[in-house]
Image 1 (cartoon, rainbow, N blue to C red):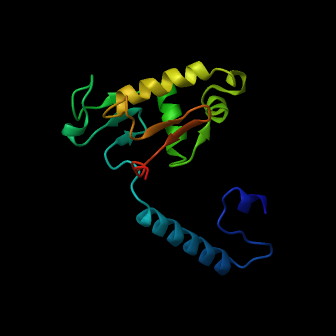
Image 2: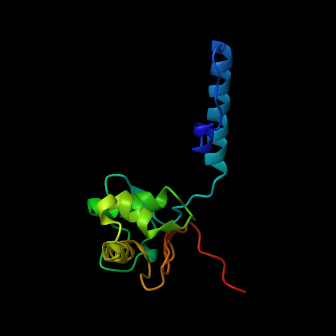
Image 3: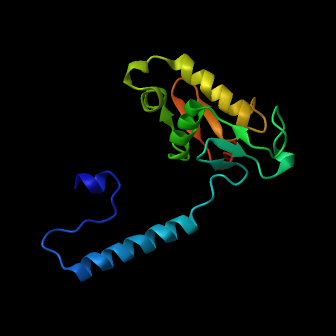
Length: 154
């Protein structure tokens, strides 16, 4: 049951037949592939490369210090912070969670580090860092990667 609570889609009890196992694996893979095709692309305007680079495919969308459409280099810490946010699209991540994930348990109160690195990511990745589109702050609570712009209030 713990595995299901942690996100598993299925489980098999022993004893089991090889045909049942293979059928469950095929069904799981098909369901995963369907979810991937049906899910909106969270990086429609931003391309993130696990080598620590990010680029904007539309040159008109990337004002700022980097040349439009060019790769933007991220530090290992910036990359790690961005990676944690991207793994949870649309979800509010508490400051303490981000600090623990990126810097470790000993940095639970280092909110200044988190603010600094979020500001650096916005300067490097957001079209307008003063009005972030993807890397949002929930004051006093945490941060969120918003794949699509939030709906306007009202």
